[in-house]
Length: 310
Image (cartoon, rainbow, N blue to C red):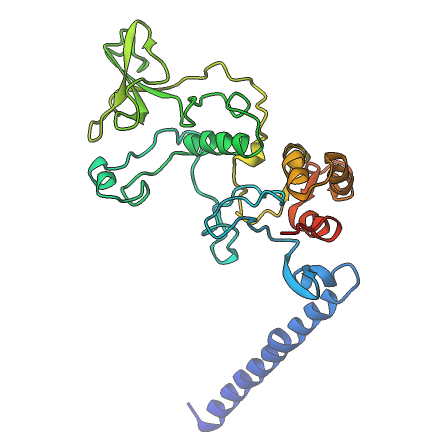
């Protein structure tokens, strides 16, 4: 290759690099920034930061926890829905739990490690999605003073775990057990109970689960129980959003919390409902999605209107 050709080729490449750098590295980012300054878009582009007493306290686009240093809900605040993003609403760990509706069997904790003083999670306990929902429902009912019955859900035991049996015995051609010979409540370890939620299943006494035994050979059967089809605790109070960052709750979950918040702030429930009504957002364009309540905006307004004094 001649030197003149070499120079022309590299000069053309350098010009293309400079042009693309200007377009993609300068012009395009500048155009996006200018568009973001348009009224109506500027707030979202800047993170929709909310302030209290002149200090930023969060974004109305990202949820946050309203708990004390031990993780206990603060009674004067409306509580957000659960979050699977890191330790809760961590934007750097956004994502779902990856547990699906068929995740109904828990991984038990090692009893030896529990006796040694380890926590259940450190001892290997991993609750399935069903048990997570059941335990959250019981906790919400207790927090709101509703009683155990109000926290009950289909396919949950009274103790707040998934009501799931492993039914062992001869199978038919479709894989269903036809004559049970043994039945085990797989989510109720014998270390925590000796009386499973269901005493008898199809004439066979139900056993509690023993650590180390394999019950996967049995047919896994969830038991619906007598809980109402429409539980008092709404679904968004016991399930996480897909991103783990959802800042909203349903009006039903908000209404459930009114009495507790009013008591903690020493005002009437009607006064809290009046503030709540101003933060109800309807469906997008009148038909998209469901009505919601932004928890941070609501709590900030309550702090302004009815501050808690120690």
